[in-house]
Image (cartoon, rainbow, N blue to C red; front, side, top):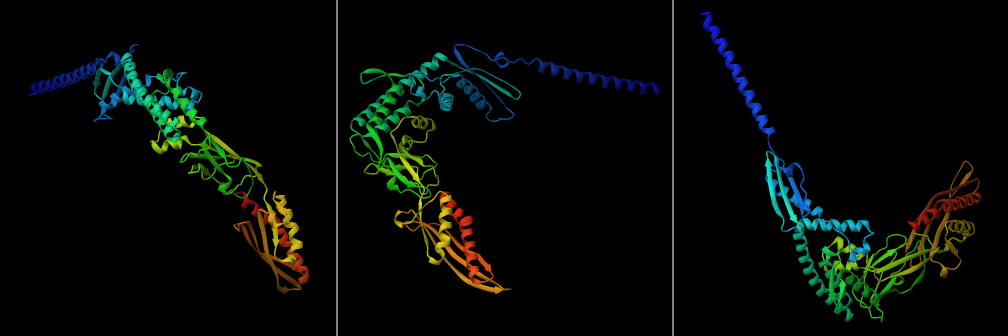
Length: 461
């Protein structure tokens, strides 16, 4: 009975050994199959061909289970577009901006984005996928690309010529805003080709179209002029200018007003409000400085015709084309501001306090750069002080005088610039007479050390 049991155990061992060997063999076979997966040569090493732009796109099927093929195609086409270099020719409209690196990069980025969106006549060479990988191979004939692009250039040139001719007609009729809009439209049509040398026939001669278009803009600029109502004005820091002081006229060289033209203003010392204006029926528009906080003696307000705003009146936002327009020379003008310190007329209503307080006030104002005048008619600012003193309690042989008042700084129109209630100023001495002198001295120090510095800050902030 022992022998059959031993035989059964041996058989079980052999069966287990055979199963183990079989499983190991399967795993070895599986690994060998995986190791023998052959990837296409274009997956292993990027191909090159002087006659084609080549794009290889790859994506993960696990990460993008529903649109992996579309993503791979997009990646391949973006790679093709990246190889299409945007150059700026010396006979193109954009050549004068070539040294502006930021602008050139913006133009090249636009060309690349447009190329990836408008590629045509490319061909799919191959597709390969394995487990989680999806690969696609596209190519575009360089000859085919140049032919397609030339067709687009020819169509754009035909359309641009019509628009430019319409602009020339409007310019000859002195319809300058309509002329500019026609030139803007032509620039928009030529936008993808502004960096290229495009020849066309205009007015019976061959021209580089981009340069010709630039000349039309400059010809309009030579036809019109922007001039200030006054080239120089006298003004004062701490105060504002009126709109009537900062007026500009836009018109033709013959003096005819140009209506509904946008202007943009700038100020040498910072922001100005309003920053834009539209010419009225008389060709006039203006800006103002509500408060001049800079004490610089020579300041400038500038104005220029705003081509960017003129563009926005009829067109959608376009950062690239508005950058082009911002670089054009346009009619401009300036007004010089001769900035003076304002003169202050001092009015101390309590005459008993005048002799003690006025010299201190004059000295304090002059230390801050303000002028002082004895006549109200020659002043720009009014310094008014209302004050009184009252007797307080007597304690332990000491007498107290309370000084109260109200200080007010205003302009000649009555607008209050600074005001302060004077309180808590007390004179304490052995009798009321000496206490009054002490109270006046304390009031004078308060005005000099606190009130006048606060008043000055209110003028320049």
